[in-house]
Amino acid sequence: MTGARPTLSLAQGAKATRILGVGSTQPDRIVTNDELSQRMDTSDQWIRDRVGIIERRFADKDEQLVDLAVTAGAKALADAGVAPSEVDTVIVPNCTMPAPIPNAAAQVADRIGIKAAGAFDLNAACAGFCYGLGVASDLVRAGSANKVLVIGAEKLTDVVDPTDRSTAIIFADGAGAALVGPSEEPGIGPVTWGSAGDLVDLIYMREHRYIFQEGQSVFRWATTQIAPIAMRAVELAGLKLSDIDVLIPHQANLRIVEAIAKRLRAKGARDDMVVADDIRYSGNTSSASIPLALDHMRAAGTVKRGDVVLAVGFGAGLSYAGQVFLCP
Image 1 (cartoon, rainbow, N blue to C red):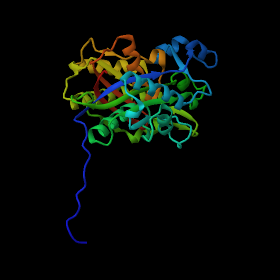
Image 2: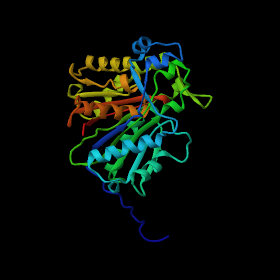
Image 3: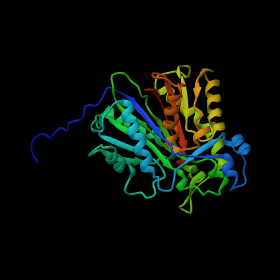
Image 4: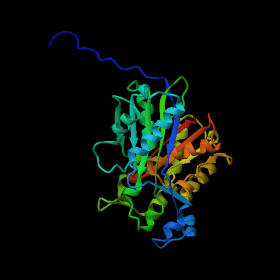
């Protein structure tokens, strides 16, 4: 071999990124605590006291995860005013696809009208949306993509034992999406992420069929370990806790959400910081919970364009991730 070694070219990415639009969807069927109490030993008050849920949405048997993702993704594009032809990458964070192949993302992209897209699923369970948002932002900044559609979608009723009080009262179905694109000014901060692999036995698939979680252990872990992760995300974004307008933790349990907010306020977050409580009417939708809550809060007017949002997801793995972003 003679001559100079060839030099590879690198793609030129965007200076910064932001969320261009969001969208979400839920099944039509509303399931109340009273309905659940008819088939297991529980009550409306017991569920409200322990997890804060009033009702949740269950998909019909013929309504699939991909269906939910398509609807949420299309709404995010419409919200952003972006045509499917402008999107080049689709990421679908989820942990409830019925089979590992084919993935959800390629099917979702095609049905929305996004042709020849880079498409992949991402499984970080309830931290999945924050993982996906971090990957999408980095793809755009690296020049590997221009506009990335991230859709957290779950059909948890497929993997929950309907007679298991520890899980059947919590989990639900839904999808939430965000379109990520280039920006002149930073609109998405750096992701901070990690995992506690020594604790994988706290949440897993029992008999490869039903989700199991050791509720008390997960509660203790989340209420002590997640606030520092959220604070690290604020630090990486170059901000102070007092700059945060909105906190959207993964909607796992209202008591966990309130505990995280309390710890952050003790460290400098404002008393008037808005805290998502979407779990009350949506249940725990795993990777869909953060974008679902954001879209609902925006529709209700409790979150507005330009608000500084701190999101942090955590769940099976035990995986966790968080970042700061501006509300579109």
